[in-house]
Image (cartoon, rainbow, N blue to C red; front, side):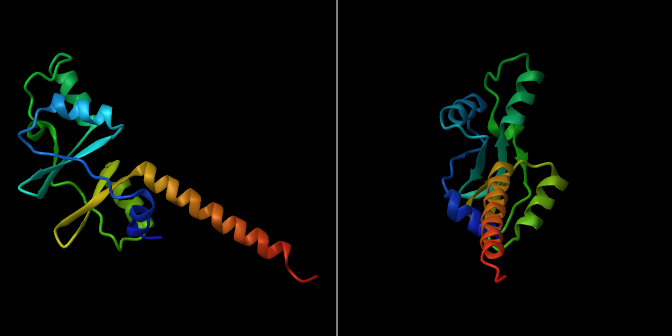
Length: 144
C-alpha cells in the first residue's frame, strides 16, 4: 500500500495557516475542525507544521495563555514529508524515526495532503482485514 492510496481513501482535506497567524486562532481552528495539525505555508510554500503538541508546549511555557504568539514562533520548521509513491512501511518508519504524528504529502513541491499516524493505522488495519477475508474465503473453498 502506498501513501497515495491512503490519501485517496481519506481525502485530501487540507487546512493551512501562515507563519504570521496567531497561535490562538490556529488552536481554535484545530478544535473546531477536529484536526490535530495545520500545515504552515508562506506564499503557497510549505514551511512548517503546527500540531496540538506545539500548542500545548507554548501554553506550558507561557503561563497557560497564547496571547499574541505567532504560528511561526512555535511551528515545526522544515518537517519530514512523504511522497505519494512511498510505501506504507517506509512511511511508518519515517514517522517513528522522526517522532512526527503528521506528515505533509508533497510531490514536485506541491502540497497534496497530510497523513496522520491514525490514518496509517486505519489503512493498515483495513488492508489486513481484507487480506484475512480473502484468505478465509480461499481456505473455505479449498478442494478436499
